[in-house]
View (tube, one colour):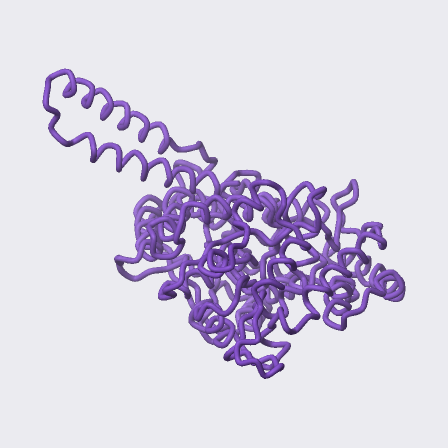
Length: 497
């Protein structure tokens, strides 16, 4: 919700700016001049109202005495240049909105709290962090590791409980409340995300569509389908069947020539699960993760429709399933040979040179009776944590809180600005769809991208990959051992932290 607030802030400010510029033209008569002056004044007052800041609990006398706060962050060797950390440190100002916002934010924080912000980028954040923490080194005060690395540190009991740090308030809107709610364990929270980072936005699994193909084939507008609650698994498959084409007529599937209804890779296996409103882990009254009683009949229905979409290789092309990678996937969509594309939000930035217009939409609902859309965040995201080796964690916690707060008014608006200024999003409807997507994100501790205790999070995806709907029997084979593993791990985490 904090990101949506910042998005609206940017949108209103853009509208105000356009309106104010139009009012600068000299009117032909005094009456118009008076009206223009009044409207300009109202616009200025509106801007002031919109940019009024929320209060925060950062101590007024916070002073780090010129000390350096070092963040351990992800380098490009982890998963390529696109996933290199870009939201923690910038050495100089830039014309790029995100980089400029990071630089500006850091200058404000450094001046106000007498601190120096630094980062060390490494390929294996988990390995480096674990070695440093276990040695008792305080060389990294804040960690921004990838999801799997962060979770391995949680399992090793090497991270502080953010909820126990008095100078941090995890209930504030600059922290992602979906993560705060879904990822706490017995009231303890070992990692977080929010306005302090854009990586969670980049790693959100979304769907895009080719606007030219929709127009050429006279298909229904995906935007209208979403607005009218008709964007479902069945509608998606119906449109995919119309769109696919054996372009060379050889009766074979050729990724470099044919046109497909849906192009993606295997992470979309899990996307259908969350799109249907399902989850692996729930919470009990004590905020402890539990495996919910799943409605096996409903899960099998979701599997049946997902299998229909996924297993038809003439209409669905998965890069890794068919022995290719992200380059070929992007190539198909850029060339206009894919109606729908399932990928992370970050791909929008990589498609900036695409000549054919495309739009952003949520993953479809299972059916129109489903209340909300559903999306997950890929494990390539970076999660913020504070290691137990951080000695002055009270001051560091306050500084991190200040950084997250300041990011709400600098980094997040800059992120949306890059989408709104026409370089990436091609239309205002995509921004509307992004609202829906971010509202419906979930962070599931039991997913394949997180702990996946006992392999329960993998049941749906493995069955879908095989084209099997034997959910109930497969789940029952795994659940006893999974519950045992979950109980033992929770006992260790809660006892030793």
